[in-house]
Length: 168
Image (cartoon, rainbow, N blue to C red; front, side, top):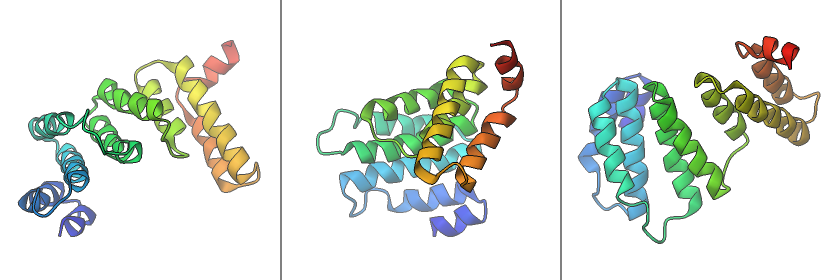
């Protein structure tokens, strides 16, 4: 049901649908991932109060044993997207920092972190992550690939970077 609402852009309905079954026959990991998805849906609905409520629920499990770094990375990724949607870029960056510390990050990590740093006006740091994204794309897919071209375009399109490159 939540997926239907998500696809329709009805994020509050998606969150409320998931809340109905939260905790019912769920493992601890399923519960935490559900909380992160609900937080994400409420962020896209603009409900900061609900987002903070679910943030607190999730933070209560931070030192719990048996939750893999991969699971935490997934949870933090939902939180990063939610905070970014609400313009809470410092909070989103905190989530990225935790993902980075865990060593679990996907091929898009550098792009997301660079974008957050850029939104915070930390352009020199952002540039480092955009260049890393370009390198990773080139190594993984080849310099003739669409992914490499996309990474290069993302770097070129970043507002303010052209002037930074010329002056640097």
